[in-house]
Image (cartoon, rainbow, N blue to C red; front, side):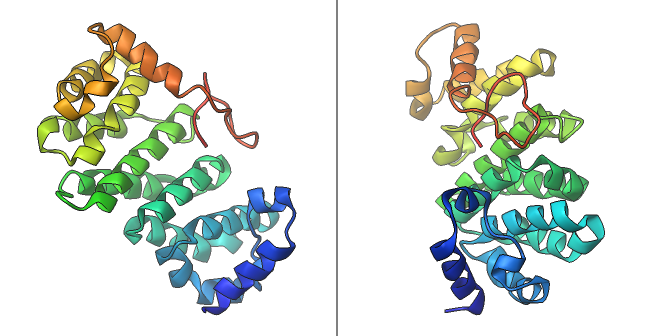
Amino acid sequence: MHVIDERLAQWAARASRPQLRAGPTVDDLGGLDVVLAAADHLAQGPFLHHLIQATAHHLDAFGTEACKPLYDAVLGGLRTNTNHAAFASATAALAGRPALARELGTPLNRTLLARLQQAQDADDDLAAALIGVEAADCLVQLTLAGVIKSAARLLGAMDEATEDPAALPEAMATRLPRLLGVLDAHHPSAGLRDALERCLMLDHTAETRHSNSPSATCARLWNKTSTRPWPSNSAKPRTGWPN
């Protein structure tokens, strides 16, 4: 077992429920030198979300300059981690920590857009396809929260991704309509209604299509995203979104 895995196990054994939800601090994991020495292991393995949590705590406590080496590790993990469960946990952690997401800035936006674009050519690689959707989901959350100031690149990437929905991996095509519906509700002039309709024409998205009315479809997809509250430590958008 890697030393950082042992540190995580020790922390989890003694942490309270609120601490488990908030994630470990750098000190919980043995200090900055220990975390940086294990950065690649954390970034590429199942504990990327703990690296993000620890980085967010470190930012709150010590500011930007102290976190720059950790930022590189976080971005590296988001860029190259191939484990879908790890990536999903990481983007969920990141979406709930807008201050960290703002600090990561344009490199974060580019990294997530790249994962979305890579997923379009995933073919039979289920993990890559699902990682692309998680990246898009995170981008939507950060855009709605105002962390990403301009939605233009995301809107363009989503439109490009759905030019030929039949060519997309099925795991990706079945999850994109919800995100397209949300974006169309917030950016009705962006032309994503056509992209949504293209996706809903596919056989494997039929269960998403309960109505022939595009407006009803968008409303239903939007309502599905409103069942969980926005994290308390982030700016709340006009409605809730999964954290």
